[in-house]
Image (cartoon, rainbow, N blue to C red; front, side):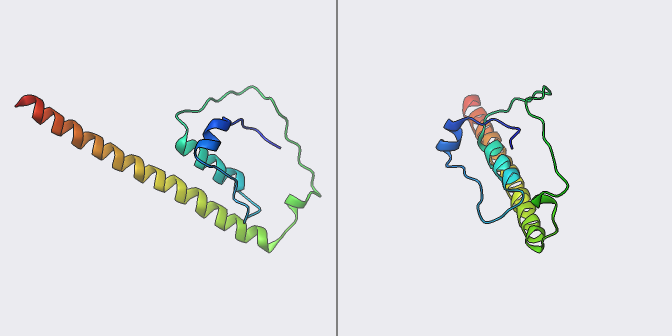
Amino acid sequence: SWNKAYKTAIIKKYHLKFDRDISLLEDQIFNVKYISVAKGVYYTQKPYYHYWQRKGSIIHQPNIKKVADNFRGNYRVWSKIISTMMKDREEEKMRKKLERQQALRDSE
């Protein structure tokens, strides 16, 4: 199932792939990786897909591996979010520093 559309050029340019070593949250990890390199996103409330869940499906069965994958997946999601935020913060600091240096040169 899906509920997103991605630009293939971005996926190829940044070599984005789904993590294969976990069975849960691999889509969320991919989404965070994708959003961290995309210049923007488009959101619509129009439904193009209707998601159905069955009670007896494998995703709803208890499994200790799913618990471990859930923790590992959440860790990867939040690690990527935090590292992206830190990178953005450092880039903003550098941009401001360069602007100050340019302002000093311009005032001479």
